[in-house]
Amino acid sequence: MQLRLEHLNKTYTTKRASVTAVKDVSLDFPDNSIIGIIGKSGAGKSSLLRLASLLETPDRGEVYYDGVRVDHLPKKELNRRRLEIGMIFQNFNLFSSRTAGKNVAFPLELAGWNRRDIDARVKEMLALVGLEDRENSPITTLSGGQKQRVAIARALAPRPNILFCDEATSALDPQTTHEILDLIKKIHAGMNLTVVMITHQMEVVRDACQYVAVVDKGYVIETGAVSDVFRSPRHEITREFLSNIRREEITVDSAIAYLQAQGYEVNKR
Image (cartoon, rainbow, N blue to C red; front, side):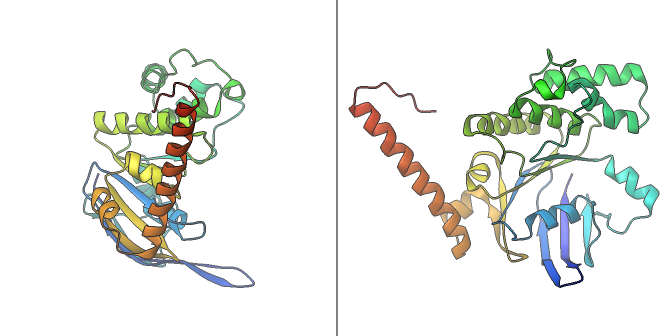
């Protein structure tokens, strides 16, 4: 699916104040790509995701899926369009009262699938994410990484055309983060799927994305292919994100060098 946003604006109003979270945002990315939207806390990236994923309507501006405008749709058409959308979240949003398999089955039940097709699809999706032996496991018995795999399986079960990931690795340790990113890339390569990743971690953009948009104070301040942005960042905020990665890499390299000097055998990932 090709995603295009044109001049999106969104203001949230409370009794005390009004905050414009998204300011005249226009984005246009190739279909079937992995897109990273990065920004600091409060930059507006999650608000932008809610508009792009049709969870909220913009005050002004337009959202297009494959060239068709989809914002401000009638309720029946909006519900149909939402079947084309998969979402995963930082905190998994799974039903603790359901097993892994029944969590994956839930959107299929809502969509009116018959039981035989649901059972087959659940097994297929759990196998895809490496949890074929966990179908009957209570959610409370799973690790964070396993819960996110269940969430991915649930999001993909209805065969969406676009997958939105809202800080999907923020609650995970570094090793599990790598595993989840590798899984998302594998799924992207094997399916006709556009992936939009919301993150505050430039490492996620570097390791998983093909295109990136940098958001600050509600505006998109820089966009382009990841390789181009990493090679020649134009905005100070982008350079700050990149410098944080480089400092981390220097720290890790220094630690490895120290351990090797002490006679330890260290295998770099």
